[in-house]
Length: 448
Image (cartoon, rainbow, N blue to C red; front, top):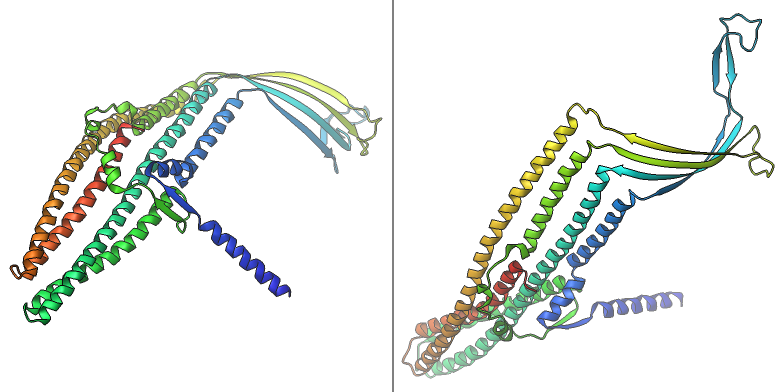
């Protein structure tokens, strides 16, 4: 009976887990992007980095605010530390050269105290406050960069799924059409009206289509799983895409986009490089600030008590109050030029960061020109491939009619078919290219 109960619980648990994994999702492209910005693995960790940076900023700020610490100590002297005293202070009859051993203290002692400390001035702290803001800004910028990367990955993955689906649909249509043509050709061959070579040529073409169809179906499955992974959902979940490839293509046709110009300051990679330069500037400022004096103050307040027996919990035990105020001024004077060497290193690193910023600016301008050119070409290629597809369809149809009437060879018909299949794939790829190339261009100009 016990084994049956355990087995039932295991089966129920497995069923619940299977139901949990088999979630169903349905997304348009924009919905997929919005979902990924919340649940993509990189996006989630980018949010955590920002939260951690905010805590780091407060940690730095708190270092210059009042600090209170408590202390409690108990000491039991098993054997006293003896102190030697020269002369005969404790025994006038003794020789002045004698040494007397004296134990100071009590068998047991206890003290407790509170300390309030406050940093009054430290150049390094002032720079650290500025650096903490830059540190936070860096991770906020990195989060924006992560979001733009995630958006582009979703668009590419979404487009690949649509491409695979459309390819499967076209290949299945081609397979159906060619199977019928092959059947009719076989019947004609049985009647002795055509040569066997015509049948064999069609069989070769059909076998090629079937192979491509099976491979495209496998690629479609992989494309779906890649999109799910990018979205941050379980790869075994059900996912339906509501946008169609042709509709997305039309909505992404924007000739004016590449004519708007490029402001490098809006690019997130440039902002991160600028942030990096600012960090190096503050590091240089930090090294210079270490030549300044620092001033701190502390107030102590506490009680101590002494006894040869452990009587500290006794209400009659005497406790002695103590308090003090201390101010500490530290002035760097000479470091054997070690501080100067660190300052020079920070200065060199700052100059390197300035050069890297200039390099990033030129590189981004070059990437923009390339992305703009590729997007413009994708639009031209789409128009060309659409026209070529229409021509290939007409040529294939004419060749099919000629072939069925015995006016054309199987080689000419197969060549027309291959030309049509290539035009179909080129047309589909041109539509995906418009979507992905526009995404790359928008990423550079930081268009939301």
